[in-house]
Length: 340
Ligand code: WQD
Image 1 (cartoon, rainbow, N blue to C red):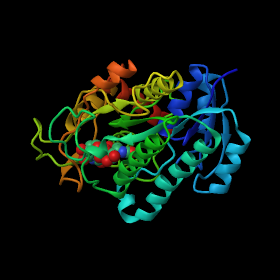
Image 2 (spheres, rainbow, N blue to C red):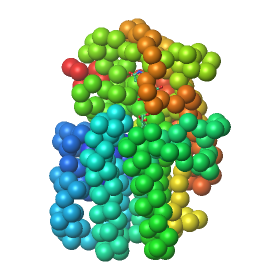
Image 3 (cartoon, rainbow, N blue to C red):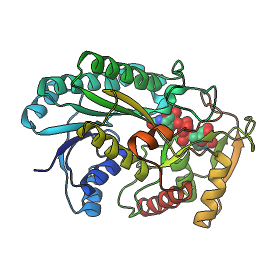
Image 4 (cartoon, rainbow, N blue to C red):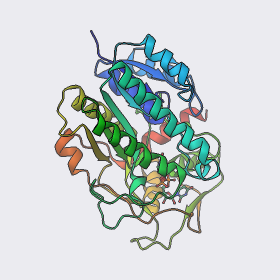
């Protein structure tokens, strides 16, 4: 019998790549997704890559009755990887209650069902945003959590706290929170990738859409940061590597190898790249020129963030294999495919 894993938000950017990684390792996957920021065609992409069509249910996790009904019908789930959430920082400032409902209520309903149905293993999508502007670099998991800069960031902090308290109260409950740095790229087959809604807020989709002629010009938000070239630095991780980290984290839980029943790991590459370095690398690996201009800083942006990944390496045996250049090439192939 194959081990069955529930992936919420499994048609989203990171979720879909994780479904591929799980299926390639022989897991049975059931996806829940409300299609609010994803497309049903992603199911075909996953099927093309893996040769297996995952089970899929279009459920909105805010609908508690539907969530209960789902778990009543799927008694064989052994673990949950929970991606379903809203993630636009700016929108969260405009619509805080929507973000708290989407990201917190749904988490609670899932955890309640896990308790009720004795499902033990839970992987949570957290974010390096919990660190705010770091006091020292690279950032380790022991760095202090800073007051969140947005309701979105706050939902990740609160989410971790809810899980930590649950783990304390129920020793049989096992959980890992993965704090992602900046996920980019697409599957090298270009069958799945990122599908941003409307005008992209994140750097790489804006870069690829500019290269494709959908946007006229990329705005570089600030060149007066205290960094070598004046632009802000982030730790960009290929989504295929990120997806892989979920499988190893899940297996740590399934095989009872964790050291505490709630653990937190940074998932990045350990390497920082500036916005200017991203632009130059994108141009170089893809052999094209990007239209860009320097504008003022974006409110709420921090100067530099990159991960210390030694804990994930030591405990999970996981390390990013792909480079930022690989990710920029794959992102561009994907963009070319979807803009045809
Ligand atoms: C990267 C760099 C921008 C767009 C955010 C969330 C985080 C996470 C990922 C999500 C910054 C610069 C960007 C543009 C630019 N969570 N930039 N021009 O802000 O590091 O992280 O997304 O689910 O929680 O905060 O990522 O891709 O928006 O920006 O110059 O048009 O690119 O200023 O330095 P960020 P990003």
